[in-house]
Image (cartoon, rainbow, N blue to C red):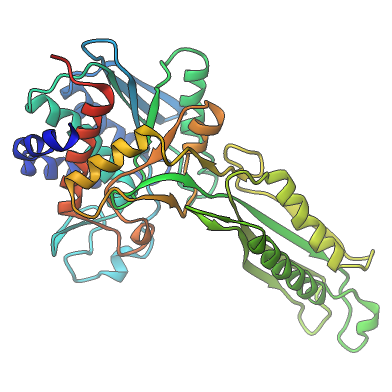
Length: 417
């Protein structure tokens, strides 16, 4: 059924209109904290689609979420497309591309068959492709039995100080739990996947470790407690622990767990270093417990620093759906919905629709783990160029994403007579 409708949808797609919407979305700067600028744009488009229950509400002062739905013609399944409206910063972008057609990060320049700009892949291609997919069904005269809902939330990115704690999705999920928003049967979070279907994702936590000894003049080091030496012992133990974690198990879709030491700062001026700080990030597999993993980190460090006069403190600054970080999540890769979406994307573009795992953390655990609703990631764009000066999305992949989403809506929700 999906392949039969794909040709019909491809013929009906207005490529110019679709591209104009995508480029317009990039033109609305929405660095974390300024989501309202993009939500204004989305609200107008969602009204054009005549969505019912259109709701715009602030999760924090001046920072709105927005959601709405298209009610189906009959009793059918309910499908949710969800994504975050904020992007990372553009620090250094203009300097990097000075004097070129890529200089303006919000110009959405089309270069060598790709649309460039901050937020193009992460994740305005996915948001606009999902909305355009519904419009495409309208144009093709396809009426759905089930409901298609959209929710666009803020505060996913963590690049700006004091932001990036998933405040937007926490607010939206709370509305579902309160019964104010109807829960979907299945959800697609439109993070960039190059039109693959990600049925699993990693978990993570960040740990900042402060090691404090005692300073002393370099000529009498025996009077001090060297925090830098202690940090060396701690790092050696942490790297050993990472190897042990990686040897435990391998997940078919997301690989092996590990930790990565990402920062080291310390030292003294012609003196025994009194203080040193380490930062690390731990990758977790589905099924791993964050509290247990963090306790293992702490035990490894404390075991390596035997001197009772050297203190160690641990902080976890990146709590998301867990107080320490973000949990891993997965759904069965053989589920019928996963196969439907995979087939729809493969039909829209050759070689796409592969079932894989997400090498990143985003907000599907709020849906999968907290609400108990199956969800995947799928959208145009390549996560490998996001957050960089190279962020761009292939135009043909974007068009294929629209067609693939529309075909999936038709198959999952059912087509009314």
